[in-house]
Amino acid sequence: MRVFQFQRISAIALLVFLTIHMTVVHYPPFHIDFSRIIDRMGQPLWKAIDIAFLFFVLLHAISGSYAVLIDLGGVARMKRTLAASAILLAIVGFVYGTLTILAFQPPV
Amino acid sequence: MYRSTGFVSFVLRRLTGIALVLYLIAHIWVIGSVNGGPELFNSRLAAVQTPIFKLAEVALLAAVVYHAFDGIRLLIVHYFDVTEYRKSLFYAAFVVSVILTIAGGLPILLFAFQG
Image (cartoon, rainbow over all chains, first blue to last red; front, side, top):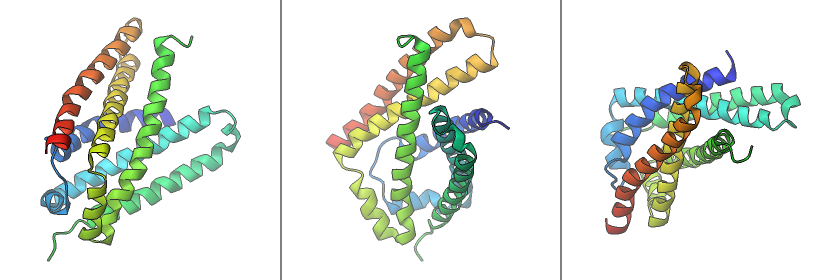
């Protein structure tokens, strides 16, 4: 699969996830704090939705950044190193992001 | 060439994309603080909810909305045989983005400055 195909697939998924995220988290605007977020994030379904959202955000952001860097020409000969770094960054980001999402636990 | 809608959309797509990646890094820094406990999370979140950050949030909204609608435009051009409408679709994506930024940005600013 080519980089632009990753971009297209993740873009379609993000249109759905971002609309949900903006509607649920940011509108109408209000002061956000832990107690407000935990109402939603205490539920396993929202955690699963946010992990899927994270996956597509990282896929889109990292493959997009990779495409922009490759377009710069001068770095095109480091394509393999860049691709390996992008994959590593995506894995680290996904693990850290997932652990963060799972860390939202209601206080006992 | 530099005045063509194709070039303008190419540049805007890249600029908004880079801005969104930089925002993502900041977002991870803020949300990741939950790993240090609710107190740290609340203090870091409070630091980015001042009026100046609310203004930046409107700029962020503009970047997100434009990037999304430009993406929809690209998908339409790619999957449907509408290349002759490429220019009109660019203007349409731009106008819709401006309208949605105003509609979405006003409540943010009203909340930030009036509470």
